[in-house]
Length: 263
Image (cartoon, rainbow, N blue to C red):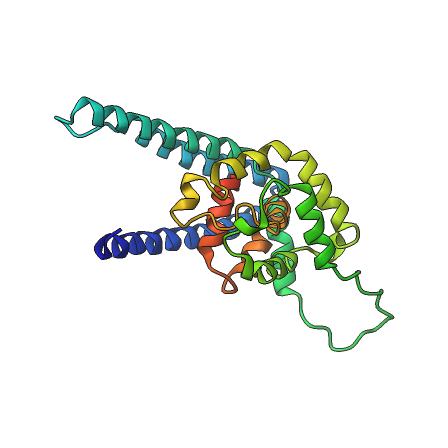
């Protein structure tokens, strides 16, 4: 990639990142307004998911109807069509996943309540004991057993950042979820095994996308925790990740996983 191409791509990423950031802010506001209006979380999830899936469907239509430039040689046109079909298939998958996304309204309400919670001046009664601390080593070992046993650790693209990524991911585990989180993670891996294996095959080490320097978290054991958080507390995960690590790492994982919430 030339310097000019690299700069142009960087500008595109910056613009996309801004659109994604604006979308997250707007989504939080929409959920908040719907809650004020008395709309149940389940109905709010359905409304927002349908709107977002419709936006992706619109992109699918636009891509599907595109054609190679006039006068293009047949071989080039055939390659163009194959590329269009590949992108359209990905967009359809994302639209389907987005339409089925649930739990975000409740997650949004919990996040807002947490952010607005005032600091108590002094305890009036004896406070309950703290939730058990998460054992990062046990969770990492469980992730390696559950999902990434077929991935040689020597192939991980960001091994030095593993601990930092896991720390941020676990900070999105809410207090009442800490007890038995290893078992929760194992159950999640069993329930989504085929989806995890497909993500690893399509975007993991050795895949064409990974060879271009993207999708660095695919195959990292701690990404199992991130995928589980995508399904459980997506907005809280966004909040704890923001400013701590590079957005592109989480954005790529969210795309590969099909997390419709991610900007």
